[in-house]
Image (cartoon, rainbow, N blue to C red; front, side, top):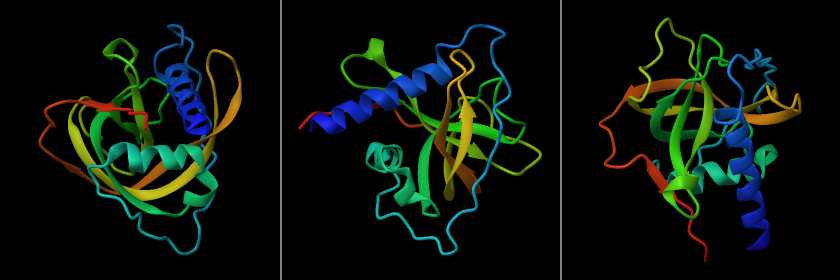
Length: 168
């Protein structure tokens, strides 16, 4: 339980640094160093609406999820630092209260001329990969999960963008 809380805290800090804590004009281009996915992909054994049971294990143990095909639903979030073909499929993670809600999900590569609109809801199917990223504030280099989309479909918005971390 302590390990899960620690990993969730790291995930939240990672997301906050990437999405909420950078200074205006401080976004540096994130180098997209893509590692080839495993030769044979497996399908995740999760319900597509089970956002946290899908996302958290990938952040906790990325190595064991590389090459896995997943389907995740959320809203579209963009940052200036994302490439032309990138967006984040996102839900707002609440650990304690709404004031601490942070965007959580996967930066997604979608090779198309048109990305979905910001704040629109999508279902994304793709392969989990990883890339090297640099924090625009601290300069720290880290490996982040990265979703290479094979399909992006518009869906009806959920009643709430929030997902809740519940302690056992």
